[in-house]
Length: 152
Image (tube, rainbow, N blue to C red; front, side, top):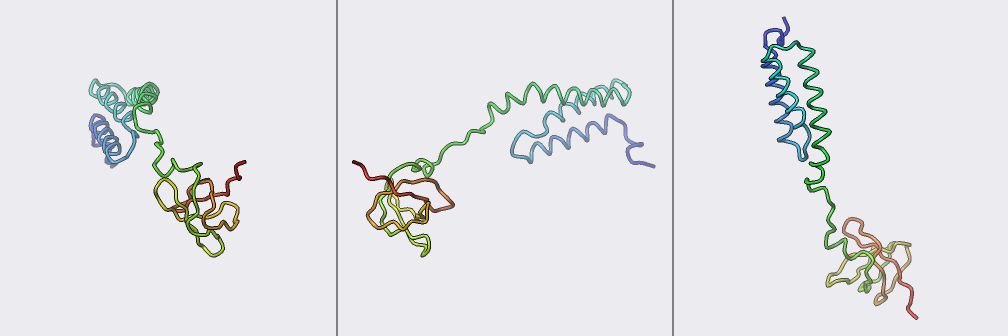
């Protein structure tokens, strides 16, 4: 005999709601709260004696409606903005080479904004100590640089 046959539908909807709430609690973002609300409404319809197909329809409709109307608000107020780090702010800045940048030998360092960075050349060009370069991007802990055009 199946386990579910011995349980009332109210109990099953309570279990479903608890499972959705547990999933919500252990995930980083808002993931299943809408289904917990749908299970709550389906549980109420089960307590009122509605047929199974009505309970399932209520679960699906309430979950979909709450998802549809609250998801944009949740996305607006949950911190989904990417904030540039201090490191990102040096991209595009001029740097001074303090150790010859040579990708083949794996050497190179530049000084920018009061910090020394391990550096690699964007185009594999050897860049001598004392030259000015431009920070192009960051790869791991290395600053990828390119020679700046001499100013007239």
